[in-house]
Length: 89
Image (cartoon, rainbow, N blue to C red; front, side):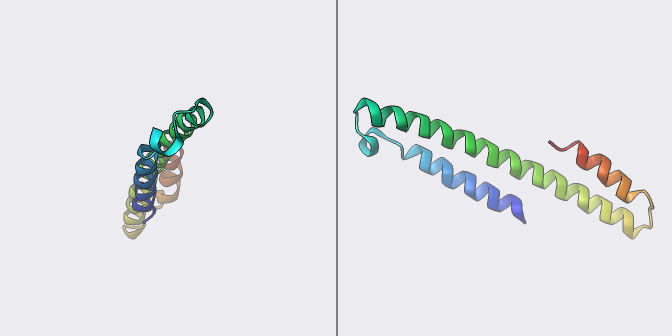
């Protein structure tokens, strides 16, 4: 399952972003400015990975429903899945 891996990656990046301290980068203006931008980038990546995990779970749920529909010989399962997948960002 991909969602747990995405969530794990988000957690690792979140931990990394919290390690961006003055002790690591010093108080000099150049490194401090870079550290601020780097921390912002990491925070944005955490949010992106969390969104991907949420979307992966939503898609997996729709696939599961489509498989159930196919098992019941419901012919419109593929069309339904296409429609539902299009709703996931």
